[in-house]
Length: 417
Ligand code: UTP
Picture 1 (cartoon, helix red, strand yellow):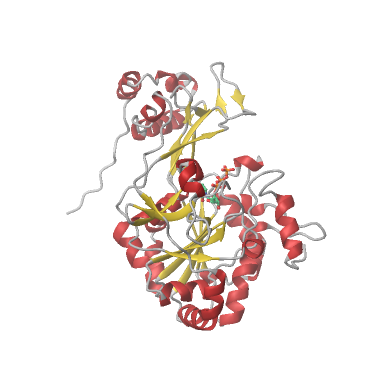
Picture 2 (cartoon, helix red, strand yellow):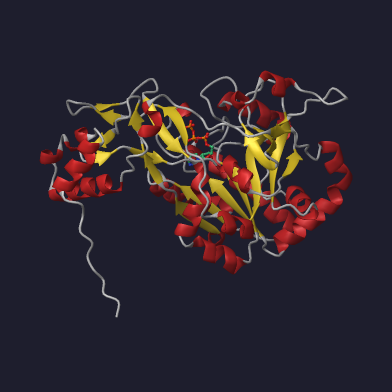
């Protein structure tokens, strides 16, 4: 017979040993001021802390070395145009058979925008209210109207923004989407460290944690029990997309059809680079497998290499809109993605117990990225889209990829806001 046993927390003594072995004793600095529940929570957090993480930054941050790179061509706008009808019909059929779901990555914190709440709650309108979430749901709705089929929408949130996100959708009546097709799930968190590798605390009884990057989306979806839901619907393909690109097409039938017709296990929407040095991740081959390589990981020679007709060989940047085959995702779910160390502004409790909100980056977060999943795939269809029609991300407060640039592009596309 199965006996449920109450699992004991790590004791204070055990926590002290674990922390002093790693030079992290400061996490217990305020222990005596905490109530019983806070003490228990802190000990639980310490028990699960990965002491290997600070070691990643001890001697400065090094990104993993890249393998041998080779170009990967995209199906271009012209080629897509020639086969548009065939691709679109195939995509529409898959959507009508409920084989396509959408996954909105909305667990990020939008630090560059200085946001406290969910980024999707940003009002991007001028003459009327238009929230990012609303705009994205509206984009998806266009496909629902075209195909006459609801597309299951899975929304990844984080512990920090889940409640606000869920209540916002409820309050706004899901922006007209059918709530029976909307599912929320919460992503995992990871601790943050100072430049010296000391874990930060966000409260006197709480180690500072933040969302662990968008790479864990499928693991989190499975942990939340939603794979059963995916299977129940008969969804075979998941279109993963970011919260901040106001122009993107979601569950785009032409894109879905192109991936299906080309018998690929995944696809990535890409744009031709604005100039060779543009700071985008480029979809290419690495050691013979598809891979997304960041601009700073490429040599000048690679960045500027051209084919016989003078076209850039590494020309296609990703826009965080991917289509993955569910069966393949299930096969790779146990595989580890590389851990990236990212400099961020991390609010913390200082040595005298005050809460500090830094103006400048003051440490590191640890993240896995969805783009690294591409390297786990046997193939990936690189699918070109028109930048001015499908790529208007809001990342920064001003300038490139900002609310201002996104509004200009919305105007250009005849969107009223
Ligand atoms: P970004 O790379 O722009 O990160 O996310 P961010 O956290 O939103 O913003 P900054 O860097 O702190 O300013 C790309 C997409 O991945 C999602 C974001 O919500 C966005 O849709 N994301 C990012 C997650 O879902 N979880 C994460 O942990 C990080």
